[in-house]
Image 1 (cartoon, rainbow, N blue to C red):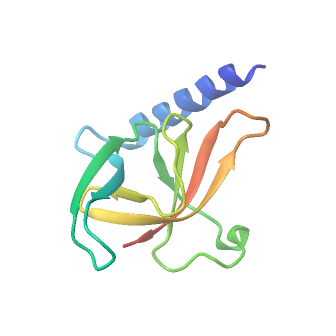
Image 2 (cartoon, one colour):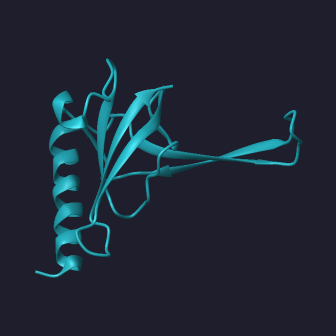
Length: 123
């Protein structure tokens, strides 16, 4: 089985799970990237934000002992496909809730990323 077919199976599985557990009015999950231009060491400048929809991203339950004691009350685990890279420090938005990415487990048995499993914490 090639990496491309595994990636397609992951996307399809996440999409099916989202469709089965969500509803048309469910809050979507977005990756929020901010960029500040100008300003100096004391602040200032203009900040622009870009929201990228993560259509195949799902929050899942977790077993805290699998995360080496880094999970705190309120933390969540986000599973997403390989289309949009998730990195530590990124911001995730679902509805009115904003989360900071605390840690990312990149699932890439070879050189191609299959999925991202992110530990997120309320901002």
